[in-house]
Length: 478
Image (tube, rainbow, N blue to C red):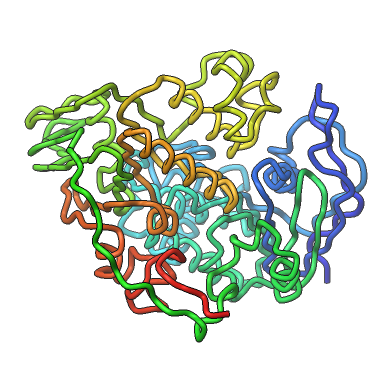
């Protein structure tokens, strides 16, 4: 029985000539997982938001979109839909209008917290939770209303690998236990791809293909479609034909252009976010920092940028610093994109020349990320601090970003990135640092670093048992 039926759906935003969606037709059966794929601005978020009537965007719609059951929606940004200060209140909020007694609400809240392993967090303030915990609270709150259809718009974009696995496992458990239909847009498909039933591929608002997982994978490979990079590595490579390139240590010594020594920083008295944290970033290199949600990565960047001042320790920077914030909308102050940044070479390279007349809040997440990056690059800083630079980026945009970062390094810039995108860091970084509980535990060259880890490592490193970390570490014998 069909849970989602979409027939010749078209949608146009107000004051836009180009359709965001055009003649989209597909069906998802009850209990299936449907993955929605596509490059940035393909129309993925528009389609998913139209499935949830309460948040459907304003505009002109043609065709039909029928959903056989109630819909639960989890957004990319964990804080976007949170309305309460406490976890218990957030979970029970949706039930307050259902005519249930206080005892009934308390029982259902306790049951849901138990199912999602959130019992110990029931009395906690939302603000004290990590990003992964906030997103899990979002999912639990949505499931309190027992939706038949679960719509997920890049729910793991801001989560570390362990938190992502916890979240996706909870979704897969819901599907197995209750037959929940899942429609998901997520750039990292590794965790749920095996259980995916169907894939819908969009390109510039048009439907490229909708079919079973295996059929779409074969199409992507045969057509050499740019989005084939979004499917798991094991589906793209013949492991028996791979040989590992030897590690060659030909790095020239670089100068440390940014140094932090023994930093201590607290937002609230008595709660240290950074604890005796030391870090060095080198000129002409991509210096990456990874770690769990809540480990202090963003706080470290803010300290290095001078946005937050440590109460102990020293920071030395040889050059001008510019920072890309995790929430890029914090950088936007104008009504149109063309006033935020000078459109020209930088915006052309980032592929956002067509958004100059748009409002910064009316463009896709990937476009907003690139607009903010253009604004940072326009400052001409010597040291670039980038907080989650790939969020909202598809595999094609990640390749373009990598090329841009390499070019900046060739120009003598110092690049520091904080990221949960382990695959991207494993492909582009020169040196990687692991941050835990506000302290850098280890720093090492990319290949050596990821080969030593079990959980915070790349898919290829797992397959090759640490012999190779990214595709540039292997030679394909085909």
